[in-house]
Length: 306
Image (cartoon, rainbow, N blue to C red; front, side):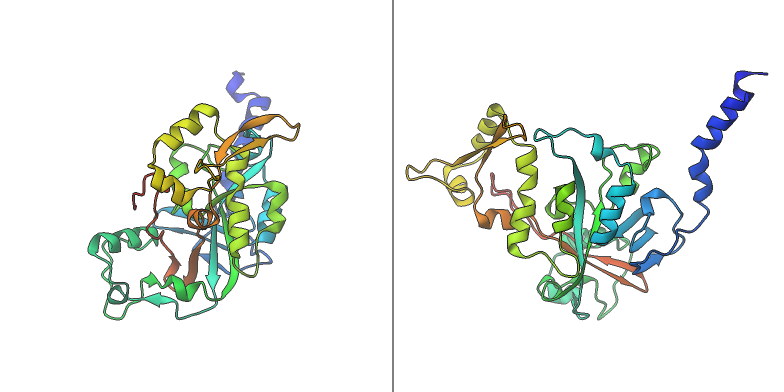
């Protein structure tokens, strides 16, 4: 008998391919259920998700805070194994919310965007490029209306590294990281997940608190710090960062749990932190999902708008 057909090898292949059988079994309805769009396979990627679905060739799995805590406890995701300078074990998540205000949309005429911006919003909101929006159709979020009252915060775990328990090959990375944008994405130490908002949105204090974690767990070395500050003009630096009486940027030093220095960061002003993290709205409807796109963002160091 060849090695390929041995009992041991057959058993190994059965175990390795067991996940494929679950693809054809729909995911169980979780306790905190909002909407599952179409057929959602019983795959660990979708496990215990409030909103899940396959739209325009991308997989979505939005989780409540309770579901996110369960996910961290039950799933062996790659970032648990990624080392940080601080020694903290973190998870990378993009942050969304369901607005209470039903009338939180705006038409193309109301937003007044040019065609290039409209195409970007369609892309960010998973609206096919060829879609013709009829008169009075509501394709865009009015962010001021959406943020007035938030019914539920939701979190999308990012799998931008290959984890064979979740992502089977490199082609899945793009598929399973829909609508990625840095401005609504956080790196959160596992012990801090319990402090994320649940049935409401982020307060300004929470936005600053959680946005700071990435800098504290992955600070810059001296060369990176010098290169970062050299990218900007003195006027932009003074606008974005706190300075001392001599007009010099205040530099914060960070330490790991053993008290060893791990790097530095220029100290951002509160207003700067509030510009670096903005959660996006998401609304499930009969068409699938409407997802808020990123607003225009300003690079603190160069002043460039993108």
